[in-house]
Image: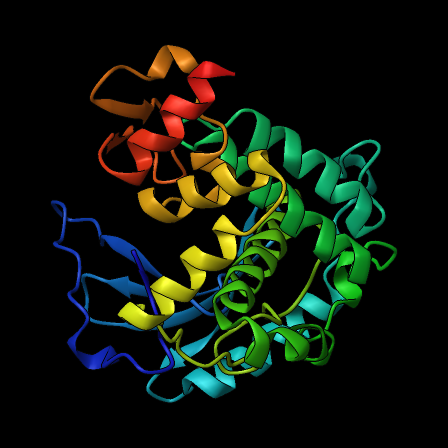
Length: 287
């Protein structure tokens, strides 16, 4: 189970049921610092522990709640993680030394092998990984700080808050991935909500006025390039993404509809051929 232990009501966490005469334990992992957990015992005790060692994980007891607060547990965990070293015999061979190295492994495991994601989503993921590596590729994973991430996201916050949120989520995912490799990072994830804040995404919706539509249509009709004119008209009348509307194939067009079998949303899209849309298809058929 995972919770934000900093804000959770720890006294109300459900204790595990005792199994026979033996004490039962359950661990609640902190969503902000996954190395820290609160161990719940059927006897009623609540103990802070820190996990270290990557895949060959070990747990070290930090103290009991409520005597030790969440802030105290995080501080104690950081001290433990700063001195814990992964034994040489248990380190992975050819362990990645920089974010560039780690991202190449991440691509193989989480991009090329992942099912249920569309090609467009894969391309977006690879593009964002490139943006991350451009900023931090030569850094060691453990050298990444919240200040680095904050400065990196700052130019995106006002211009493209949606993209900034995607980049922040990716950076957090990469840090957690580095932690699971064992010995690459220590301490708290620098990409937490407390250290890096991006404003809520503002959904934009605006209807085109009739006079604006008339001006747009007149401007498009005045273009000398017939191919460009039809391309703009087609995207406009079907209200589709350029990457989808302009990649339609003739085998996906009949007398009444046009469609694409896969879209960014992961499902087919169908457009009725009426009015201007039908005119564009007729002109393209003649060519």
